[in-house]
Image (cartoon, rainbow, N blue to C red; front, side, top):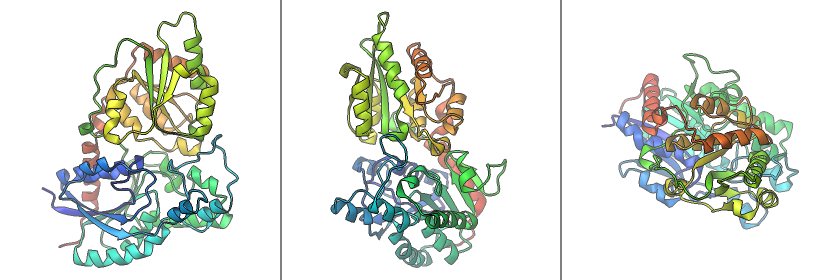
Length: 434
């Protein structure tokens, strides 16, 4: 039975779909088991780029959900067909993965809406929550971003209630996140991002990152043993979601499954060529077939059409999160492609842990010397550069031979990670009574 209350300030919440909602939806599900009752503050009327109403089943009827109206400039931009304020992928989606020239809308997005397009939610939320917390106190506050406006809401609450412990949870970096390069930031705007980030880090009692190297950009230094400020609590998988799969079919093509968003900085020409070359060999007895589930950049789709014959790949569209295990079931191996840039070196996609839970072979590409490469290495898998035909060919041969991980996925179960978070919150307080 939960005895303490934690306020979670988050933008993403069902019916939102996508990767951003998963972390705190699952923590809110399991924290009560470890002594913390979640009170979740979310926007009312959010302009979510992806919807997955089925995720509501993970929200306990006992979970308190507080809502605050939000004004979303993104909806105005879409309505005027001027472009999106930020693509749904949270990173560069230009065909090459390089900086885009942008335009007036992008410039406004980067230089007016700071820290992000949810900035108009900050002050009304602080006023609203100050009143609510005076009436219904909590023992701790957690803010999770992006969007990083959530951290500024929590900062305002910390200034009003300095005795309530506050944890700033960074799912991604902030001031040096790759998609900021798309917004043509002025030096002044870049400095503003950094100043706000420093203020959050200074006032938060703890800063949690989802990849160890992210601390370097957020804290300004690497994580230390028994770090007084920074903590690594990774993403994970929910055992209740059914990722423990049965064996894939033994006949037919060897199916490679990619799940998620594939855009410019995640393009892997070396993998496309390795698949093409494998299937073209006369001695090949089992051809490869690549299936994409999620969102596919049109420029990458055109490249795939030029590189691979139509019988070697297909785009299956988006699937709801609860349907992902079923879609993974016929896949013999799973493909993970991470941003091939500095951001990619400091982030670990949540799907990596769901992939591990399946027991399937993994094929991985992305930035070398990255947190993802080190994590996969600890599981017994390789990661190669996006243009490395031979590296991908080697991984394909390992997958065909049935190489799977030697690591136990239990460490990354959402329940176990919720226990880690619970222990962190307990060490900080509580310092309030109610």
